[in-house]
Image (cartoon, rainbow over all chains, first blue to last red; front, side, top):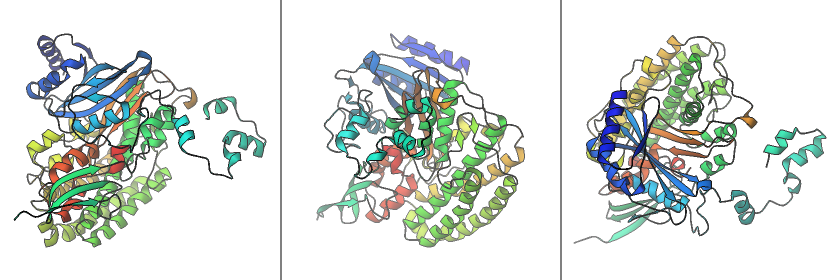
Length: 188
Length: 367
């Protein structure tokens, strides 16, 4: 396993520039790359290195750093290795290259990321609406989207349940028991 | 003369659809020329909610991702958290987890038997298999208190040890189900209607499978031997003896044969696990959940469910709450790009049979 990983790292580093790697325990290997080479490096993995299965594409919003991180997880049935290809894209007007010509299912992931994070994929085909309907506000999976404010604006509380607005207060009033401080802190 | 094309909406509420989703099909006569999957009827924003809850609170949402199979999701979450934190799991808990996962697989196979036959109008099978599934749910109720949602496999092990004499009751149920599976064969695989409706229908060949990232029984049904339990063994699957069946037909019939054999393999695994199960503790206690911080890091783990590979990508930023939880369901890949491709050229009447065969589970797509 270690030999295969070392071999793979040297092959990738000799083929692509500005690639850094991180070797994890077990069968996992991470590569940090620039977003421009995503289609070429993924094609290389699929065609030349036997990583024929695209297991997952995920997106993480690093709000504090002003960036989205996009992670492509590939699996090689031959070598039994998982490769994470990681790239970053700025949060302001994010644009990523499209890879659905390499794996067709990437189309679904990209449509979802476009809708949930507001990331544009160059030349992505497919209906704009995926899960949400008539959504015009901020893409909801972004970290700065306030779910509670959205719920308060969009929905209303059922009348007759005013005392249940703050559950903890209602419990204290009814039972006259003290609620521990940590419970107060973590409720609501 | 070219027939005029009509657009039909199958779902979101339709007995043949495996949940709340819609397939918009353009048909010429009875033949589909274009299909589009539309989802959005079941979006509950679980992944967003989990970012707002602490690590233990967000665990309770996991089993609700896909109703027919709840335990693989719990297993994923538990293993992802353990991988990030480096928490050890007691040996006995690993065996119990495998037993629960295989019981869950069996229960899910029973639902599939019913769904696959029901989609072709053969309703007797559904009544038999869903009835027999209740015996497995009874076992779950005894073990966990819940029939469908268990919340039993959690970070650090399992929630409680097996009740007294539980193993015997599991083995007794297995003996019963093994006999019943033979009855199912007579009803399903010796049935001329089932053969005629499934052979050569819904073909996913090797090239298409790799192009679309297909997993599970659909992949094994086209001759590719692939199973997470063998490829990337988790818990104690590397110590167990079982086979991964494959078929060459690549149609609904081939996938049904694969699942038929897999159900028997699950019974075999459960017997082995009970035989090999060691004693000892079942739970490596987690700290106070309100103050439970995971170190910075991420993990991607996978489990083989009845529908195929399910994965979970979890990210921790060192805080009390998950930074990101992202589930990769088997249906996410199967029910959109693949289904739209496979349906072209098929008959309208076969839509729901194909959906059942591909393991479509809409809640897993929207999450």
